[in-house]
Image (cartoon, rainbow, N blue to C red; front, side, top):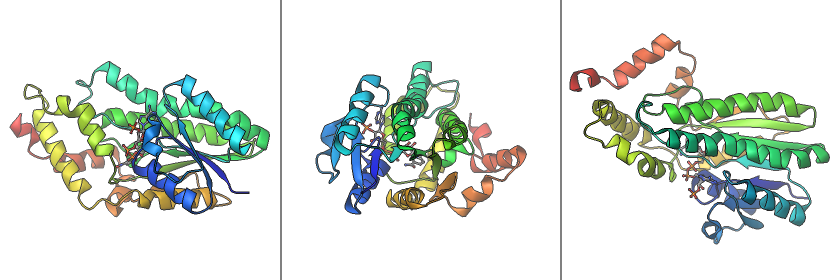
Length: 274
Ligand SMILES: NC(=O)c1ccc[n+]([C@@H]2O[C@H](COP(=O)([O-])OP(=O)(O)OC[C@H]3O[C@@H](n4cnc5c(N)ncnc54)[C@H](OP(=O)(O)O)[C@@H]3O)[C@@H](O)[C@H]2O)c1
């Protein structure tokens, strides 16, 4: 019997590409999105409305998956977004929204699905974190905080759920070409473009750094490949990097002092411009 995979955030980007690829390779995919009309042209076996911040939409979606397939083998917690800005300047409501989607959304999905996986005696939870869950950057601190939290939750869940045959895996993508950056602009444009901000020089440098980082970034297929490996592996690793360049892999092993020095180099001249 094909494995049943429930994926959040399939309207675009990584979730969409993963849903399409798994569907085309024989998995029974339950593709979900908060705007279900965005799923119309996906070849998934089941397409459902699901907003990870709304428990009233999560339960019916999980029930529909169980009704159609009788089980959930893999949950991919993919839905997520970023708000950027200096921590002093991002309104609380925006940071709370970020945690509601990127952290509490994952917890809500886990709580809805785990009882069924426990009954099955097996299951796999794949959490899409980020390289930003390994080291924070200026202006990206709020997003990083959500992904650090997701990393910690995943490590705890890996231990707590192992006794029930449920494995927990973290995927840590680098920069990937999706709608992610557009959402950052939509959510953070006003903060980053404020000419009266004391952080305007930092924001200008940030835009330059992001632009150069995003040059030549791969598409979502680079992450799909890694997720499929994590789904198929009989003994998956706790975490997988996806499309992280060598510089990023090396940065993970730096001391705080060395990391700050690199950031100072990247963001050079900022002090003189404020
Ligand atoms: N792209 C990158 O550079 C990158 C790097 C590292 C990690 N990631 C992570 O990869 C994951 C997927 O992002 P992506 O790059 O594929 O970006 P994307 O194309 O913007 O996709 C994000 C998905 O999350 C969905 N979403 C947002 N809020 C939601 C909610 N409340 N309920 C349900 N779905 C919601 C979006 O739906 P709507 O269309 O309705 O907004 C969209 O389907 C995220 O967790 C992101 O943090 C991305």
